[in-house]
Image 1 (spheres, rainbow, N blue to C red):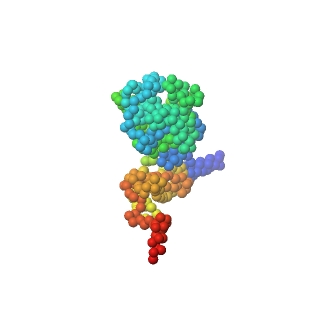
Image 2 (image 1 turned 60 degrees about the horizontal axis):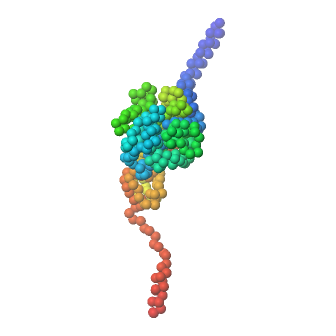
Image 3 (image 1 turned 90 degrees about the horizontal axis):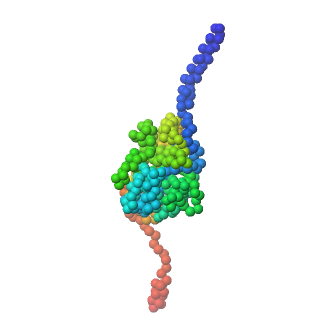
Length: 419
């Protein structure tokens, strides 16, 4: 009996010592991420593209109104390129007025002859998920619904996305048939099919094209020509699934019977912008909060500050310009071994800048690459010029031309013969 008690005490002591020597063991179980109760999910750092979670991320699924993220991106891109303006006004065509009167498919009732600016249509598409607004944005950008959807698929192909679009709103052909919006040669029940990874990357591009898009997407309500519209994002402040610790400030929700509940969320962790998507769930809002919480427990962020730099605009010449990074920090996510970050800033000029010899204020002129030497993960951050400047220094020596003028030579020959 004495030996048995001694043996039990020894086992207990070994267990205590093991726990002391491995303090992280008890916590390891809390650092796992539960499977999301949905068809697919994907989480990435919006700045670096580093992936923190993926589940069936490359498989195409119906995504409903998450499709509007690409519609709004292409609209913002057209604005940035000067093709259209935020203040351009349009009146809605009859088929979209009819769609806006649909009980099932409308969140903003529109009137014949009523004018809307592009900004109002973007707000209606992002806040209230207006299908009429999204479709009209496509027609403004490309000239017709069919041309715009071709542009959506072309952009997806250029980005290498797993995506196929047949509508700019996210409605299925079975929904669109009564509004003259079904594309030729598409099936009667055909729908947008896009992977969780693909639509998350679309959101990333939208944030880059317009970092202030969350100012619109975070509105719980807005007013369009005196009509109130409401946001179905249940994770925003004042909504039932709002969690302060999640920090969700957008971006887009979607629902159809086929797609189920879909949600692309934007949030920040320690100043780093994140994008997360859950596709095809029934409890997607609560699942998003849980996913964000578990990822915060699993990952840590190593950051380095980025400050103003003087960028040399041409090799061997003295011209420089002050440039500011588009974000004040770069970061890398890690689980166990802390990151070891190095930063390299290099001049990066566009072909247009090189051909014109001019850099305008706000133009990209350099890129910082922050690399984690432990894992190879890296983040690229653009630097923009603070002022307009010429690419070359004041004193530039150009090579003289040595082309022979044949007419001048012919005129000189008779003159020489006189002497």
